Length: 270
Image (cartoon, rainbow, N blue to C red; front, side, top):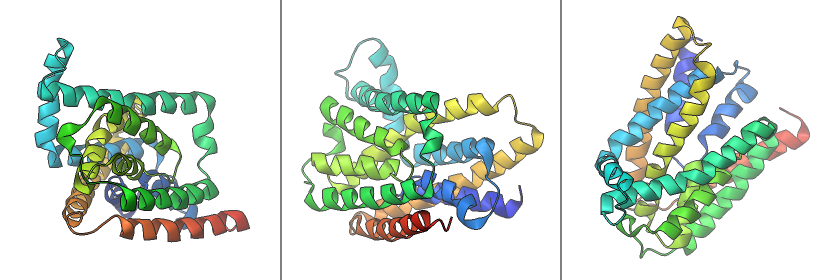
């Protein structure tokens, strides 16, 4: 791959992974709309590793708490706040892992990678984000994350396996619907991304480990580095803007892009 292509893929993944606009949809659309070759699974894994590093660094205080709580959780102590955070993150990840495996084994994951499906998901779940953000409460905080809320948000997160949904967008929608304030909803969505990205990275990584060569590894390292920088920038910007701006700008973008993609798909333009 050329350096420009690597930069484009890395920037696209980094900027859209944590914004509620669906990174997977943008990566699928890139070759469809530009004529560029598909970046392949090696690069997919690499950019996911880059974004994973960014979210871990940005939310390191919370990540450290969860890691500190793991030994206590393994000893059966769920009353400790750190162990409880680790427990809820684990529980919230189970649905998306099970649903992802089911889609992979049945081949439905490839069947859903059409421009029309992405368009409807982009538009429809954009409306869901707007509705939940406008009607959601502000009384709940991250520190009060309950098991019931973790399960609910985990089930909503599994829906994000439909391309165009947006993992962060659907989890934020769930959190806002449950009454979490905007910043807390985004914070929980970002924390939930860590085990989810790890799980998908392991799954994809196992598939490409045997086929990756030195050139692919070099390209992957470049892509991961740029995705890390782009994701860190996008995270910082979104979390800063949420102090004064709602999710409406992202919704407008989703609705416009979704409508265009539906039109392109139904007319056979792509």
